[in-house]
Figure 1 (cartoon, one colour):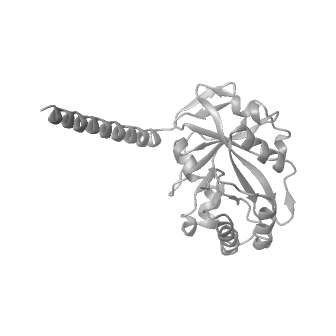
Figure 2: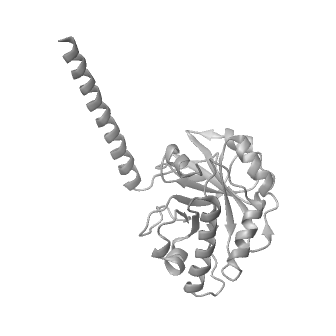
Figure 3: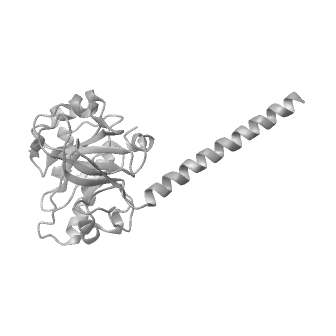
Length: 254
């Protein structure tokens, strides 16, 4: 009789656990589908979309000398910086002067880091690959490499697609993960399109109080370029991740 009761209790516990997990999943989906709710945080200097729980920044040499410990320690109402995209390279020769320091210090501070390359379709994509690989050594726990593609330089969509494809494929060979594409919705739909839908998308969309309107899913959303964070003297871009912290870690290099 005692065995039967124990079995019933275990079965009841499992049912309750499954209901809780299902409820959590439904809550998350409803939260993502709900209208974006912005809350003003004077400490960050901007309105932040609180529908999302994982927040980050992206930086380059224009942010100067960053105190990454101060960035990591800043937290207001559970809003904190969990990840940072750092500019590494541009074109075939340019390398961000602050990349190495930012790359090392962000890791030391415990912030998940990612590196991005500013791409030109008018430059040899293989030489742009070499430029990035000469600068960036990705490690387990880092985010995939990022293709920042936002200028057309009067090139037709076919040229932009073919050169971008070379860079992306070479990056995947080098690092073993699909790179992330950073751009805005107009550029994506005009110059890239459906053949790139299997790549994670980081979308720039700010100055409007709404989620990015796109036919395809995005993973990161750059929602402001005028944020403030302790440890950074200048304004900085703010981003959210479309998922929780476990999903962010899963996206990283294993």
